[in-house]
Amino acid sequence: MDLHIQKLSKTFGQTVALHPTDLLVRSGTFTTLLGPSGCGKTTLLRMIAGLETPDTGAISIGGDTLYDAGRKRDTPAHKRGFGMVFQDFALWPHMTVFENVAFGLRTACRTRDLRENVMKALDKVRLAPMADRYPHQLSGGQQQRVAFARAVAVQPRLVLFDEPLSALDASLREEMRVEMLSLVRDLGLTALYVTHDQTEAMSMSDEIVVMQTGRVLQAGTPEEIYDRPADPFVARFIGRSNWLAPRGASDGQGETAMFRPEHLRWEPVNGAKCASYEAEVLQSSYMGDRYEVHLQADGQPDRWTAYSASRIPPGNRITVYLPENRIRVVKLHHSN
Image (cartoon, rainbow, N blue to C red):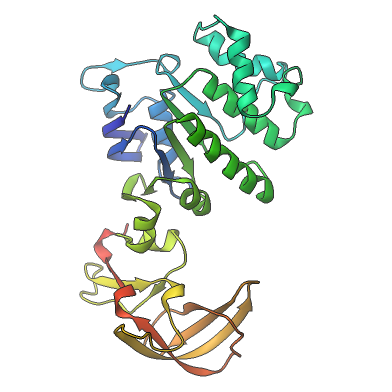
């Protein structure tokens, strides 16, 4: 069942948290709302969940209208049929793992075959042997698995994730990212995921929705977002970017162009039309699998980054080559 968002907006006092927004989350996909703190992504997620009331707009899933400001319709959160995984796990400390997972089923008055359904959910996250433990007896990763089991035990139409990995350390976060995505795929769930971490978004998503200051700037596959950014903010927020001198009007209504560090070459590319630039090497940093080289190209206002298989000493004057088909033009007036 597809999730449809139409003209949804929210204001807190004089602050616009979300401008009128349209969004489609297709059934069976993993969609990520990506952006910095304060961009509106969590507000949007909470409105979808029924934890926040929108000012305008409508929310529907599979033809079932959950919220409609014009018709004054608002389905309570516990009746929307969604599962939610929170940033802080939100486990009851006085309840066992079993009872934490059973909580959602009891709230929904779905107690038939309760034990079987709870144990089935725990088995999916490999925690069935720990059903009688309490949250404080579990590691952070295990607590996150309990939160996920609780969300899927109700067989949700949609699972909402509110930065669920941000409380974990870096190594465990990477491990849980792979595990969580695998579980979502295996269970055939539709997922809407909120994060400020571009690595999470790029590695997990079928579609990424990039947000800033309460607006959706661009939506597309990870490849589309990275290769063809529609806004300067998107280009800077997703991956590393190098910028060419702006062209057009000086009032911010012109355009500029960018390219990714991996596209700058140390020699001409056979069969490709290349622009060449004279540049000074400012620094070479060893990154393990490559060197990250910082350059100042003549006539360019910003420093560039390139990748090299060997160290290039600072102070060297070199010629670098940029295939013209790797240059992406970006309209400046899109930026906020």
